[in-house]
Amino acid sequence: QGLQETADYLQANQGLVGLHASFTVGDESLKKAVDLMKKTNSGIHIHVAEDLADQNHCQHHYDRQVVERLHHFGVLNSPKTILAHCLHLNENERSLIRNSPAWIVENAESNLNNNVGHFRGTNLGKNIMLGTDGMHSDMLRSAQAAFFAGQEADQINVPEAYRRFRNVHHYLADNHFEGDGENNLVVLDYDSPTPITEHNFLGHFVFGLSSNHIRHVISNGSWLVKNKRLTNVNEKELLTFAKEQALRLWKKL
Image 1: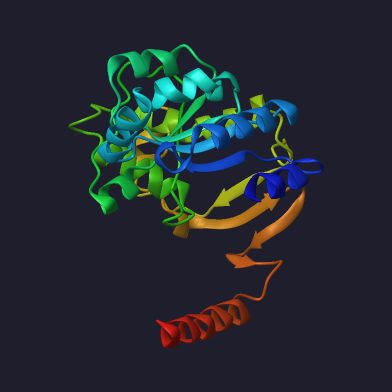
Image 2: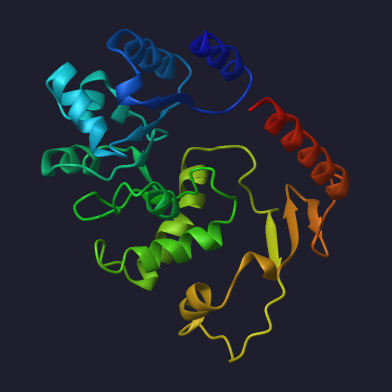
């Protein structure tokens, strides 16, 4: 049913074929998902070795590591494919990803929250971008988290954190996703404590900027945020509705 709903959606919209993880997808479903990916010229979205349990399950049931299994079915063949997390990988898996057009999404805060390990970009190639895993929608915060959390395990520096941040744009642009164009603009109201130059911008990016500094957001030539207020929804009504639904849910738990 889920794949049929995805097929119906992709007939008229852009997106990916969403799976959860290797340990929740059997071979038949995985093959059908890849067939749909090919038919719609899309990609697969899947969590990869987020926890060591994913690898243990795959080795026990399929006699392969997770990325080896995905490679076998052709998941890695699409430049639109997103491999989320990618924490517990061996060197062969890293080589398979590095030599494919697929993209990795690093979710530093989610990894810390679930205590599953730290991301390590060594030998994974350049196709690494940042994500949130749904914990929030703040990519500046994700970039800063990737830098701080990666100091030991990933040995990441500020330019690399910024590169992974900017790679989200490259993924969208290279794969021709609608909405990525020159008429998009984010304006920040950042009262810098020091002059900003091309030489110290990255320092401000990691240690100074936050989403609180965003004043305007323009998408496809239209205002989404103006003077720090959403223009297309009533924020108070939305928050009131959310609180009502939270209380409704809590009563049933």
